[in-house]
Image (cartoon, rainbow, N blue to C red; front, top):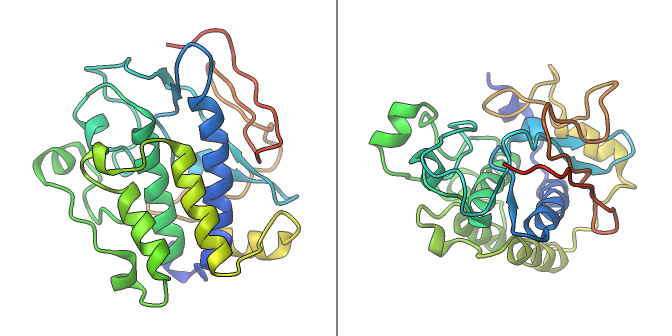
Length: 238
């Protein structure tokens, strides 16, 4: 069986992870000179440290907002429809990819099903089954914000990552979820399955042993954790 389906899918922990990943992305989107779009958000680029902090890594194909038209890079299972079409990217593109991660964390399933190859992404319109249909115990508010993030039309998604963060904060408060970095055992238990693999692409959310805080094979680099953490950007953005 797929490893992600064997995990506990705790929505409190899931929203903690996604909210903090979104905070790092919001920092990148607010850079002077224009938003830096990550363009490659997936479980392998969201790292959970042994101290319970969430970090965003893998800015190797990041680009300024509006750039990259005609170039298709990233993972088919996570890229937004406009990215799969080779269009210029906006913060809404990262919102979509993070929405995919949230969906996986709360349901244990991938929202796009088998639509993970170039041909399938180009030939079939997105049809996402609402999280509550997969798992009825998911709160209505979480279902709605997840589906908004996964809207096929980018104009129907959260316009800014901060709006996604605000929606998550509101739902975490409404549901009484107080999970945080101090809940390290629960975070690690949630993010690692029996065989240590998670998600459709079988990436790990746990920080690899010996990894740097935020590594990328090429600039720009960001160390993105919670809101109080300062991130560093390299001088060259494609």
